[in-house]
Length: 538
Image 1: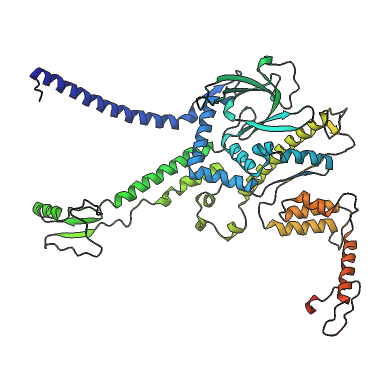
Image 2: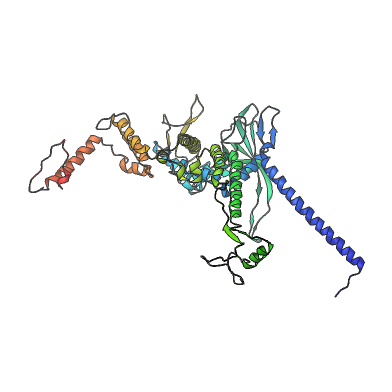
């Protein structure tokens, strides 16, 4: 054993006291640091607003936008309210798919080839990727589509650049509404199979031309231009003087977090109610000590238990001076339902009503079950119209690239008046982009309206609407998925379309021949042209 001198003992004691003070200081600093982080999180909305171009307008800085987008991404992954709000809208917008075609056979062949391309499906044209793009548009408010075109065949490959890699949008100095270039800053690296890791790479700045830009005067350095690609920018939740959109769930983030903290606190309170289940009263200190000795047991037994808890239905025997009764928690003022008002704030921010967010059917009614509230229905239809515009722009670009390609299938020419590229021999290029009805109850009324419009409420097709168009509308109303394939079977190339009257007469003649061969109860049945057979006799 080592014996310390008094001086060594004093030095050691001083070191121990210093360590104790240091630990206490660190704990205090940690608490202070935690509080500061919370304050900074709440103050995010008040910082990083930058004044641009010496004007009176303000625009949210890129750093602040990135922080908002990072929070939106994290909340979508872990917060049930934000996740349910975004998924609900995505399900109603794209849950039943979208039909895209053209009345022109050559054009339809080009756009179907673009849609069916496996590489394009991986980015946009497949059901799963469409859903992802809708969710990303809600979370980040910006999508940067990139078009890569084969100049020989006109084939277009579509990709997107992550929103965090686009650092700036350079607009025409004389027209701020006309974007010219997109500044992309990203890490260019390759996977190293030798070390089985991703290489560090280097930061690269590249400028992408806007897909509609024709300005040749304002040019970045040639070595920084992406020669083989252009960008089509889609932005939502922005004002007219803003370059970038702001996350559509931004205004709901703090409220969804507040509701999470409310439920955490409520859970803590309910757990505290169970900490003490019984209240035992003794007359004096001796009784308290005796009770402690008798009841010194755990709530559940274990392998090392020496004083196990009593079994269910046991009898407690005490002296006259002791009283034991369960603690009453009934009438507690804190309820989980008290936080519903916070959820209503999330509803107000996202446009998704309370019972959809919480999954609580008790707050709805029969009318809600059969019909959607009008504000939500309009919100989803508005987003569908936005996507119709997006698809129209993309497909028009695909068609134009095919017309200008050396070996393109389509032939086009510039309109002398408008300067637009138009199909040769086609007066009007029509794209059919349609979504199924959001509400299923619309199907019957829609079919009835189509039939009345096509027949003028008569018995056969009128000349107002082409039979093929009527068939397309009916198939869409009935929810048919492969509409183009069905139309090809119904209207084969090179065969004239029969009128409804002709079809019915042929069907009647065939049926009549079959009926002539039948004998119902030994009696021959005769039918006239305008009659229908009584099939109940069969």
